[in-house]
Length: 262
Image (tube, rainbow, N blue to C red; front, side, top):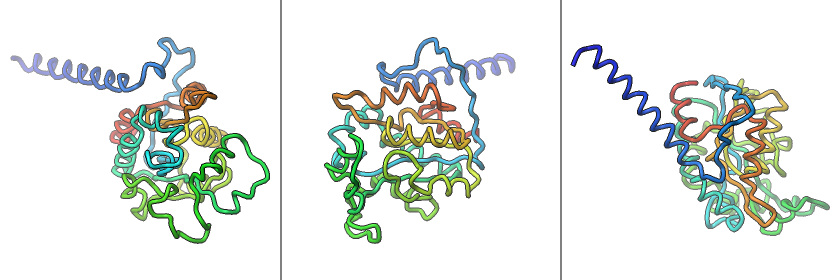
């Protein structure tokens, strides 16, 4: 085989490998959530700059992501469908390897939160099932292994002394915690967004980040939502992600970009 033929062969092999990889990423998306064959909206073309990028994971906690959690009856189907926990593990690993900022926006309820005089349907439901409950804002008594605790699979990444764990958000967006301040102090203006719940906390964080001038890529299979008679929260959020997010990537696409630095 000539040197020219060998080069062409390698090029063709690379193209085929890329096609297989792209096909594999597409195959992971359930048919019900597939993107339109002919989208009308443009791709903003978001690119990463690792020095200015952060992974933000919302509510990576037992009550949302484990069959032992208080919210499993309404979120378990979507968590399983999206392969959420393994995908988040890949994002944590790749983000740490890339050296980007990693931050957690958690959800905790203390006794005084249960004295609120009004609330929306999802808030009332969460208080009723005692999701993310902790006995005190000033104590970690009973935290380990509780529904408010982080998933065991993620603890090596979260508890490494480098990850930002913001103060708790109380409803859906980051307006009630210090996440935005922490990210600005790190010089971050590009966000890789993942976690729970798709149409509530994730979408609310997305909208607030966009309003504050951040670029945001939502990792579509590292997000899950509730399914109730009121509707499929993941499906409803996916429509809005397509309209407003700067990018909508799979976990594999995100990992590839982190590894390539772009």
